[in-house]
Length: 132
Image 1 (spheres, one colour):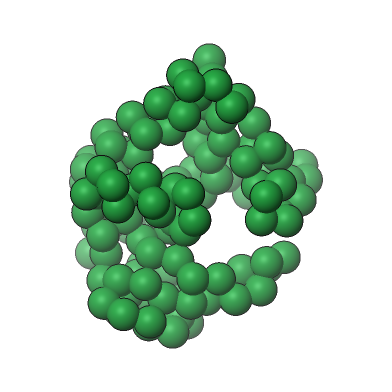
Image 2 (tube, rainbow, N blue to C red):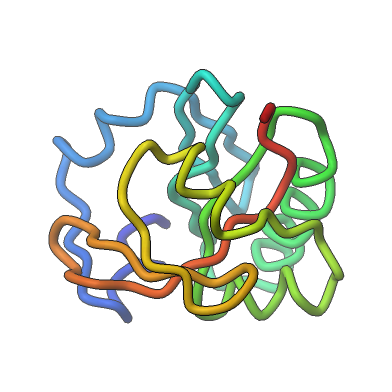
């Protein structure tokens, strides 16, 4: 499921990538991979089986987890569009830099560009409620 989701953006999903995320949330049709940080649980990779139920499962997880204190994710593309449509909470770019502990270049109040290994410079927005 993860491999299918990230094929569109050219991110190969190798076992070493998956091993970076020890927290897994799995349903019949979708999954999220996450890691614990000083700011809470960062949802890092998600995927679904292409079914309506899988897509709904991702939306439900976004809706639920992004409102729980300490859960957050960096998103872009289709997932960002879903998050925006659902009016999920966004984190200011300056706060996202603090949470990530990595340099980012703010584009507007919420969007920022940062280097991601294997993808180059990518525009992201952080959603959810990291513990600031």
